[in-house]
Length: 81
Image 1 (spheres, rainbow, N blue to C red):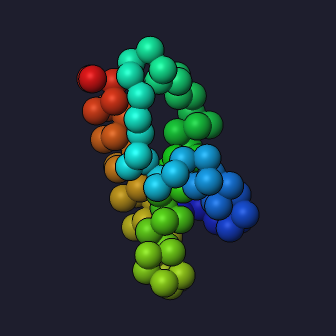
Image 2: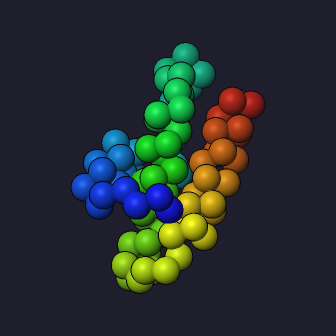
């Protein structure tokens, strides 16, 4: 994961409860996502993985790539609904 500050990651996570897992709303209420919002979702998901691991360093890239795949898969599901 690119070295984001913990504060930035936590603020991104706070804006996306449970990272990307708890999206609710119908098609009319879905906001358009720009690249900055997508980046914040990825950052929050990667930070959640870091927290789950017990704040163990050394998995930055692995966490980032897994979070990116998770967010992109989530966004593609949302677009199909």
